[in-house]
Image 1 (cartoon, rainbow, N blue to C red):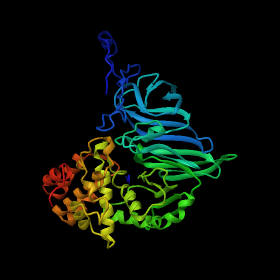
Image 2 (cartoon, helix red, strand yellow):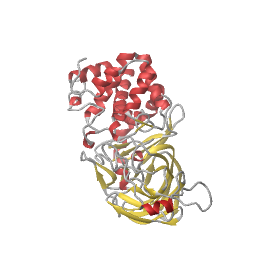
Image 3 (cartoon, one colour):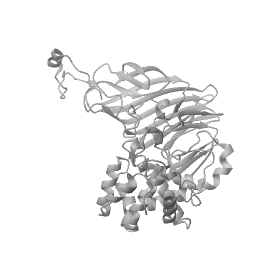
Image 4 (tube, rainbow, N blue to C red):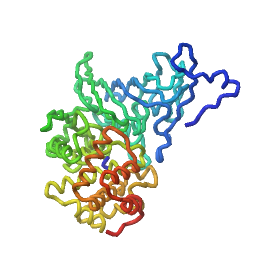
Length: 470
């Protein structure tokens, strides 16, 4: 971005029900409720326990004229415990029906928690399918920092974005970055509109008079906050990078001229990132450019970053760097945001350096000195907290996470030298491809990969308060 509670059984019931399914016909399943939250340090109710999602199949119909969204979500998941009930994160829209394994399921919603009670308890290890039908006029979700996400309408369409928890505003799911899944998204819109989502466009066809259906497929695992749908009268262009990665750009007509130069660099940036950070981690690349001020920020939605208005080259570089750092290698918790933003910011410094612009060392020195003549953010980077310890949810996208995070990486580079440092960047992106990581994972990996004791870097630059001495 640029910018488990347990149900207690009565003692007599324990003796009667303490028979777990072992694969024998007729065995009883003893389930218990899945947790309604994963205790994330900043969003403790985000996500849910007791299962892991493997696949989302979303079938959506949207007409900008009336703002109504009609959706069906089929969620394939694996139970990590015996489940008598489980929760989905879902906000605002009316639930019309729920099925689990093809049978009707009782459900109720409290706040943003949709609790589902299957007709039969689910076994540990069982792969199960949940269908949720829903409808309504989706509303934006407001972040702790005041920004808006979720389903955002425009004059002639809409865009759905989710960082950190806004995806619950347009589809039910396990909305925490630690639970990644594959996606198939079908969107039906009136003729004359384009519907864009992550991954590969599998088909586009007229389904009935006046309506067009778009089917999008994302095979690689994706955190739900990176899922997107955009509806509008976009100007669409397609192409390929020199190495053959398909590129799909959808641009609001009034932003086409202003976006042309930056988006023309997209294939080159993908190739550059592949050399610096290892092979591009997805099967497609692209962008979605919305009308100006749609969001007030850009977001690294997987394979197709979303921009509010025409982006410049540096912003395109930043969001594409996230495809490696944040999208493929995703955080285990929202406290680990510097692993997204610090790396993407440092990628900006490297791009400039490699192209003969301001080098990473000069930027590092400017930020250390608070020299705003080099970068207007140089002084704000020293706001109050270190990059690995934002004081609350409203601060996870503040300047220290971006710029002090980048400075941590440069300090590692100073300590270990260029050869080991760039090997570290490539190794980190490759060895954790499509996985989830924490700050502790990175610090351990960096020391092992480089063979250097970097504890002083962590103590002073990653966790230390205030401005360090050079």
